Amino acid sequence: MSVLREKDLYIIQGINNKKLSDMKKVVVLGMGLCVALAFSSCKSSESAYKKAYEKAKQQELAEAAEPVEPAPVVEVAPTPAPVAPVREEKVELVSGNGLKAFSVICGSFGVKANADGLKAKLDNDGYNAKVVYNAEKNMYRVAVESFDTREEAVRARDAFKAKYPNREDFQGAWLLYRVY
Image (tube, rainbow, N blue to C red; front, side, top):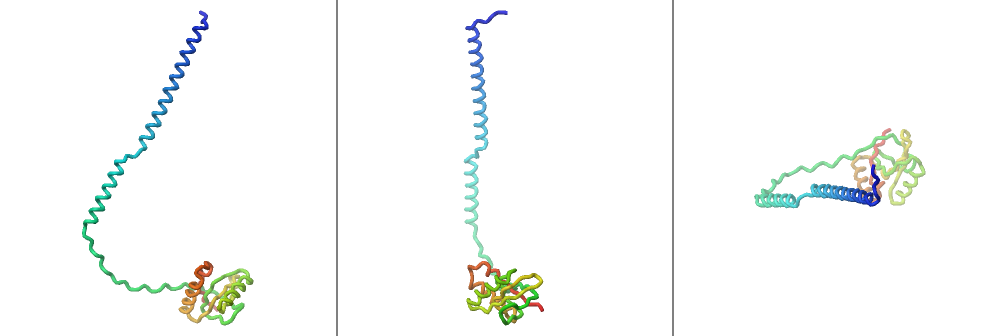
């Protein structure tokens, strides 16, 4: 076995280092090529967009050139006003007076004091509000007004909602039919 001289050892190491350096270059170039191919394959061509645009433009021009026939006038019968839904509940008058068959309800509370507070506010606004109690649901309802007919109650509910357009709670006002 021969002993390598120091000079020969440096030469061998230099060759190995050069090989490693060359290998690194090849790997880096290969990765760069892969990245370049990946980006170029995802790129949509400008000509495809141009073709689609030109096709749409031609179709638009063709439609504009076609004579347009006026639509026939069709008389439509007026649709009847939607029937306002009515809840039927067995209620008893707690405060206020004059509870009739149909009432416009603007609030429902589990606590009587809250219902009384809303009644007082409505009385100050000029209404003859009432508080009624539904024992089955344990709820106090605040009635803005009370009427004998459904039609009167619907008109009053719509007028009430129109008077308070910014009160989201009042926009949910509904009709109650008193069951005995």
